[in-house]
Amino acid sequence: MEEKYVSVSRQGGARRTAPRREPARPQRRGGPPRKGSGHKSLFWGFYKFLVFLSAVIVAVYVGWTMTIKPPPIQTPDPPPVINGGQEDGSGDTDISTPQGPQRRELVYNFVLLGKDVDSGNTDSIIVVSFDIPNRKVGMISIPRDTAVERTWRKNPKINGAFYGAGPDVLKEEIEHTFGIPIDYYVLVDLEGFIALVDELGGVELDIPLDMNYDDPYQNLHIHFTKGVHKVDGQGAMEAVRYRHDNEDSPNYRANQWYSDVQRGEMQRQLLTQLAKKVVSWNSVTRVTEFIKIFQTYVKTDLELEEMIYFATQALQVDLSTGIRQDTLKGDGTKTYKGFSYCFLYQAEDILPTLNELVNPYDTPLTEADLHLPQS
Image (cartoon, rainbow, N blue to C red):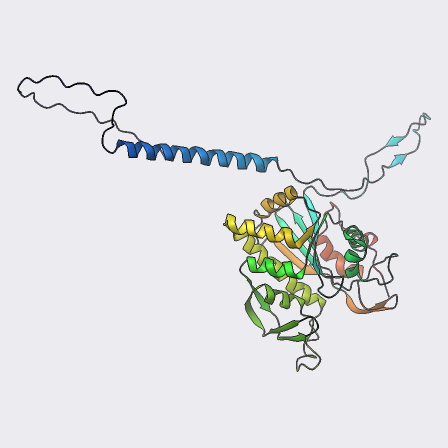
């Protein structure tokens, strides 16, 4: 806005004849100011200081955020294609550009994990792909009983990898099985999960069926009617942990359609609601408290600057249209290596989902990229 300053001069009137007076002694420089001028000077001085301070803060913030660069994508270098000697018989070799699929720029894959309360397993496994240039997020749920090829343990179910062998082994098993690399992991235990949801003030969840389950051993009691519910951290934890009713429940058989696939959908619904709340935050105090809780309850291999970078980029995503999600379709009733109720897959059933949502390469995944156990 353009500011206009107007100078006002004093207009002299007709001269009047007055008795001769002694000339007034000029006021000393620095003497008392005219009434009210001190308050105005103080106000405008303070205002200018605030403007200057705001400009400094903005400049520092912009400069700081511009120094945060995208994290490098760690990929093994494929071996170069080496051709034989040249036709002229010189014997020189021609080393061409490495072949094979290449990672797309600024497309990162994460695995989000929820710890089971009564075992050393991960109760939920969600792969998230963040396509920063296109401002899109893809999510798939991997059922916890998914069978993988492994030699370090007899039990083939993927939910035992994190605590049984570590995050790097879990990343490798996901990549080996489904052909998708994992750049980072984020693990939240139940206590931290409840605290995070409470800090966000709760969320609304659409419960798809009546839920009635009690487990005194875990002090777990899940009771919801079908429909939309506003839940706090405890309620959200109960909703995403539900798998089936107790056997003596009148709805036990009727609810058998609800499996790990639907459970994954509930978990992704919750993540989406939480993301919408975080993006809508406009309070430094609440963000600070959230960071404290995050640092207390969350395990991750993300560095602080990497978290800040991804958080600032996530603010650019339209959460109403920029998030796509699905569950890998398979059969959870199979037996593999003597272990029952394993999830097994057929390549033709899951390749479309993998390529659409979490493939970070510049070419589509094929059946040759997957290593799917079969019964």
